[in-house]
Length: 328
Image (cartoon, rainbow, N blue to C red; front, side, top):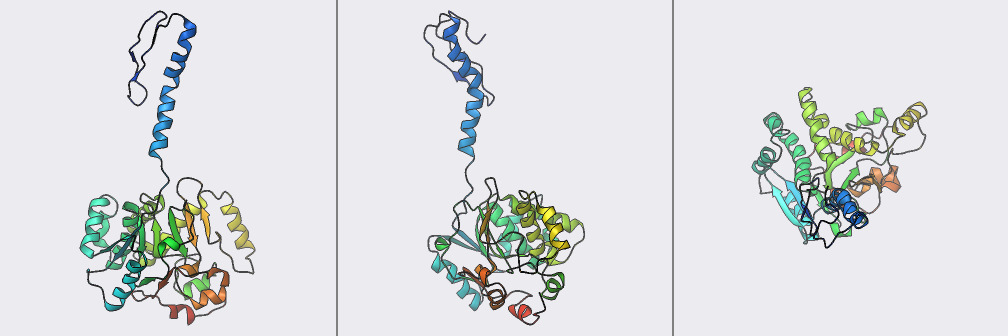
């Protein structure tokens, strides 16, 4: 028995499920009725302790005010320096770090020794830069922007819910038809851009993205779009969005059988998604790039701009979109 009636000044009560010794200093206990509160405490203590630990340990993920960018060397080209300065000037409260190739390799070696590092030497420089953005935000959190992307609005003025632990932006304001997707060199009909994104550390979406990269590498996939770029990133985002959408398959069947005659997105932008601690805010396409085409084709998807992408280091430019205005 934990404490026999008539026992005076009980000392040690057995340890709880966490190995913590519960020590109760009791006065005179002379009958079974007086023992009831003691027994209840002893029985409930493990659950109470666990609840307390969970409340302490589980906190809402927060995006830290750190801006990450990467370049081959620490010395940027003239235009890149001007664009990088917009991030520092408009966000003086944030830390800023420009990573070079040596530093991102070190990050992969030390922070992802089993997942990304084994394939590192088999990736191209562009693919390594893709992996870096997922890895650094998963490991440290913050805001990532390509060096050809300029900040047009201070981060502390973003009208994004506090609950958001990840910020992702659409690249187009509506789902593309398959023919149109191929013409403008997109990987997905509903594609998410990855020249600007933000996350709290430990994000499962980014971990999943890296898992998919490792998997596709072993599948002998070499296309940057599919292996490390917007294709695999969009897939990881879609997985997250669909996990709480029990009608996702049913809805997709309906759309394919009877395609809507108006522009649409499966998951509307400027909306918060997620039911647990991790919540994702989807930016409208116009938030992360200044695009005449987005404004023209989907005016509602071109609200106040946050980031302007110049496509200076990309295989794809705004001209690719404008020069192939096929029917949508």
